[in-house]
Length: 234
Image (cartoon, rainbow, N blue to C red):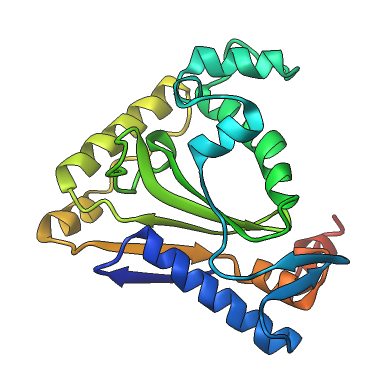
């Protein structure tokens, strides 16, 4: 993984960082001007700035679901059933969200033939991220996609220790109710927030995925020194 953080910045600044980094990688590995690249025989336009689409906009455009439907478990389940997905009564909102995201939205993003930033995820999908200043039901988080591949995950850091404790406690309660492994709240992390953290944002990028795209190879395993498939005969 490649990670970096910036103080005095939010997730939108990190979008700009990543755009410039990726274009520079492509310039140096493919010896192009960085405005286009080819991967698996298809051309992708890297011209800056890259498209930005909120999660709400993506669900409206590709799933015909407004924000109220997106955030309501019953309405989202009804939408999934209407689209022909197998939905159990025990399925959670999170499971339905990702079922639609992976099957309806990610394939549509691939067809854009440009890198795309998908931003402002529902707050439940961003436990450590700051709430959106435009709509507190969402968080300042983005993921960046190219050629059907998710390259990185970023968010503006939540620096309010009290709010972070509330969110972590909610997460613990949710895990217990679902019968999942119970992990204690990270008190060291909360003490660090109480001591003070400036406004900041950070991103985690999959280096193997960057290499896969830059080298134009079809599988992440071809970028690894010790791929598990070869080591264990998978």
